[in-house]
Length: 273
Image (cartoon, rainbow, N blue to C red; front, side):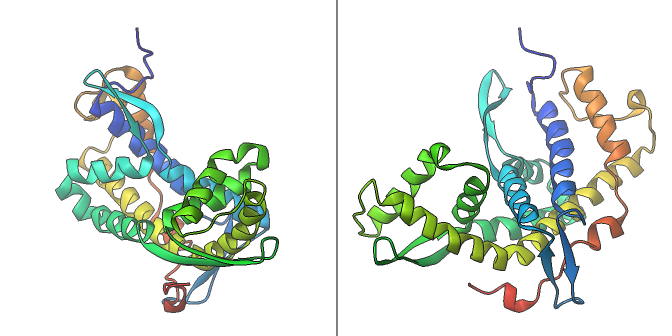
């Protein structure tokens, strides 16, 4: 028998998506990790510490990471990420998503994440200038996973690096790849620091639109009583009804809470690195 907290319908999925996405974006967008300098449209961010930058990378990658068998809908297990869920939500509620600006914000973020970039770095240990193509999503994955894992936990990442190198025509030995990875990560972190202001802008725009959508739903039926709320169709238990109530009551920030920490990045930080 499935747990009452297990996602078993699209209604359950919608509730969890709204709750968790708003929560994660609230952790990313705010004064705890960085400060915003300059005036629009020439702004940039500065992370408080190296640890703040590491936490930012980890939170961002968790936003895109798929959870295996994270929902069972129509008796079929599915893998979901918060970002994948937002795309699904925009397709499920196109008018609502468009009115809040969520559709445009998600599309802009998706375009940046999926973009292929030329990546190049020097590895002195193998006396080689290494270059290949990878997506911004891969760039973030390398940065976040090396921020939170030591070498013994990086076998999967080393395998991905090996594939990139082999496809680009390099033939490093197994003993050389840790050194290649170390040199690569120096360049990865440099690039991600460069891209971070624009990435925060894109994420902040998603956060603002999602918050706007939630406030609009609340305004249609302004009540703090869960029993009086119109919950998404197909919700399977009181666990999800109460969670939806939590979204409607507690996930409605003032616009300034989000806008003050969403930079309008200077055009120089929106270019290719």
